[in-house]
Image (cartoon, rainbow, N blue to C red; front, side, top):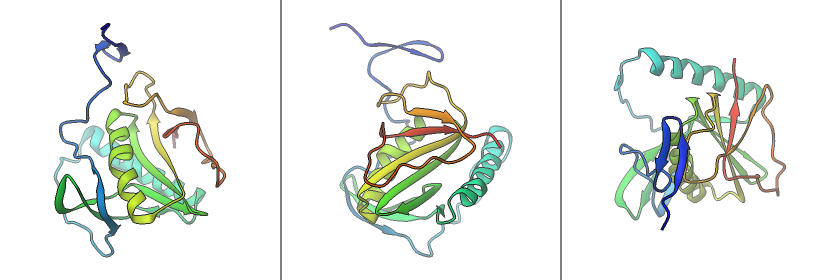
Length: 187
């Protein structure tokens, strides 16, 4: 068997597409999911608010303001609780923003820089949880980032991406060209 060689940001990568990041726990097979109304964990200051982390928080705040202007019905940072076959304990997740339009669900994840972590969050955590909780007819996922790196390797083919000033729409009843779309937005 000839090994798969993928050109990455730091040179050729050998083997299969990347596995989940070590700190990531996928949803697995979701057995129960619902909104976590009134639940907001007080996680405290887990990370120092310096450098790139601080820039990411500032960028996320600006994007959320822009999203609210573009889509008045968007829900920012809703919490969901779920149980899965991997773990019988209640778990929680919080997508950056969601929107239901005519039965279709739009999931928005905001990152300063496009990364494989964003793919895992959307495709292996938010998709199964929100599909079980909201039962949409279609799911459209978008990573909104300031910097898109086409050399980032994900388990799926690279998402379609574009630089935008206005958030595009996918008409209800149609499918997106790929399971994931990336939008480059610079305030």
